[in-house]
Image (tube, rainbow, N blue to C red):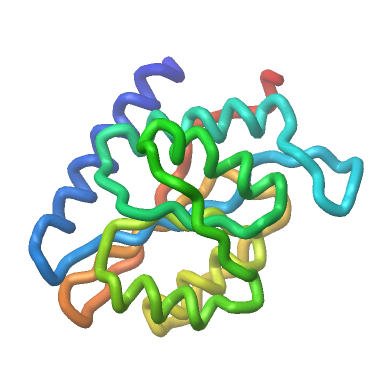
Length: 169
């Protein structure tokens, strides 16, 4: 059942992202880092978090990405790494306090990108990108992804849910 849901999710994401094919259209994917350990200020991913990060790479397998952004924390870098490796892309780091600058760069480049952030920065970044408030993300939420589709100056936010249940780990 989990493979079926993941396949369905990948197909849906691929179809949705197809809209970015026009020259003035592009997609921005925002994800919070995967499940983290609770043993330090800069924790690594848990076993489930590593599985989720690898699942993200599968989800983005058929999505054309030009850049992957992450904060410098271990948990965000470890979440971004499988997708970056699969896409043969480096990971560009950004400062959590520099979200406005990141938005300017992304909007100027107009390319499909993935941004890995945190429970507080991911909704804030989505809000800055679309110019509207976005609901806060609870500290326990790891499964949500945001897709922001840009068509010229118009932006559309789509909230997706990654099909992974970590209670089995």
